[in-house]
Image 1 (cartoon, rainbow, N blue to C red):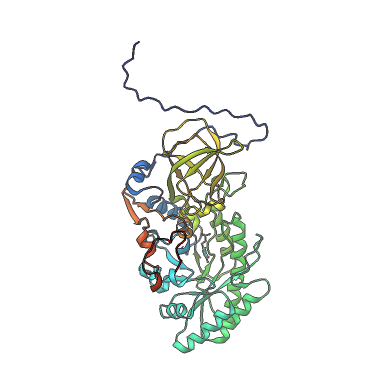
Image 2 (image 1 turned 180 degrees about the vertical axis):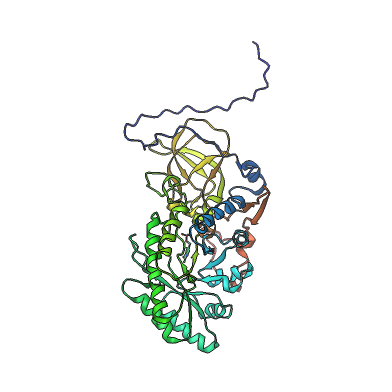
Length: 468
Ligand SMILES: *Cc1c(COP(=O)(O)O)cnc(C)c1O
């Protein structure tokens, strides 16, 4: 018996995969045949990140945020002379993320008193905080008035409250009204703001001027989210320009800004979509072209072009976020399908209810894939990360990387069954920083209280003894 002297590492055994041939149509891109492992993010090894900060782990790239923001700004500034972005806090309100956007020049766009306070604490001057949403308490409104923040009025009750507060505080609040309208995209979002077509928006404008107490500085719309039609924004910009010009004519007042809200699609793929999101969603250039054309041809006088305000959220941050995780186990379902259980689920990946996220192995992998269902770790049937995805066989302990998770996951995540993990920001030099620590039992319990009769921890009664 001879053993050959070799320094080569023993190759890992890989179970052969037999798959029945299923005749039918593939997409026009053909079957995916190559898997590219994602071993690094901005030059930092995924394995290193997981070893240092634990699994699962959210990672945000400052470089990608800056790159995406510049792309968006350039797309708009080259087509329209006056553009201002306001960062949508609810899309990702980790302070470090907000501060990157503020350093880049973004104002803040908030939809609650909590978000408003976060923006103030991040050093945003009140006059650069746009206050949206149907739920602003009187205390919130007082604070916004005192800070001179533009308040975007959602309904008549809010308008009347503001008129009352302006008298009581002897201030002239700066306001905009939110407008909803038919842009050719259905279902139409008509639950927020005042309707354009039925004349309600104009009625609100008249009430503002007749009150004599509020300073109308802008018009606002947020026509929906993940909008696949750039033209819809062109329609919205045209209708809002029409209102602005009517105000100019009737009340001799030039509106300072037209705010088209957020809603640009990110490059994620919607569930059930035939094409990959990255191949079909409109680019910043497409949106900018539709909006700028509408505004420029609306007929504003020279020197009275309104500022174009944008509250873009997901399209600016989705690409900059990744979720790293670990394979807990594999199993076969009763119908023979492969199931892989991961250490993160819908508790952390809220957007998996809508998106088919791209998921890559984090290590060298086979080129042969097998359809698998990816489950999260929760004891709950709806905890499915991907219903069907072709991946090379992953083994217990292998790592995976989920792409495009920067928007909404870190605000809509649930503390359910398990604790939320750390979030790391990789700066432009490639240095990782923890920007949110992983949660601990003490953190969760710090807001729990026990009534006196339960203050003493006691073991459960054994059978037969009297319960007290
Ligand atoms: C949520 C929201 C945004 C951001 O929307 P995206 O789809 O993330 O771009 C902007 N403005 C308002 C009023 C919002 O409610």
